[in-house]
Length: 62
Image 1 (cartoon, one colour):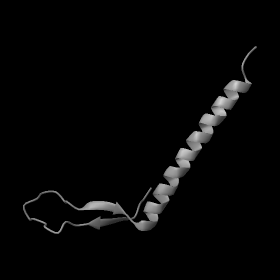
Image 2 (cartoon, one colour; image 1 turned 120 degrees about the horizontal axis):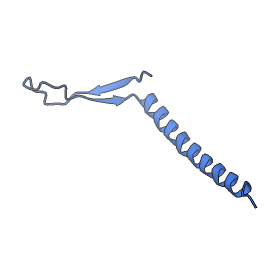
Image 3 (cartoon, one colour; image 1 turned 60 degrees about the vertical axis):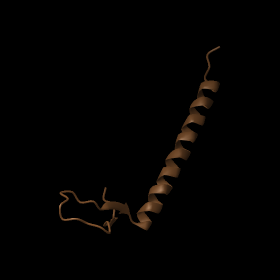
Image 4 (spheres, one colour; image 1 turned 90 degrees about the vertical axis):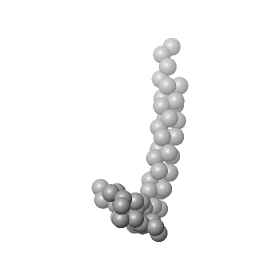
């Protein structure tokens, strides 16, 4: 999966650093997609839990 990111570079960059201090950020559209997917995952987990409880309550052996 590829995600388009934006990089923010620090205002005070030094030449002594061996590491790139820029922090990758999701683009606005990708960020919206990410949060939408997270919400869908949470909703799916709630539905799965409900259905599991329903099945347990309806399939009890007497």
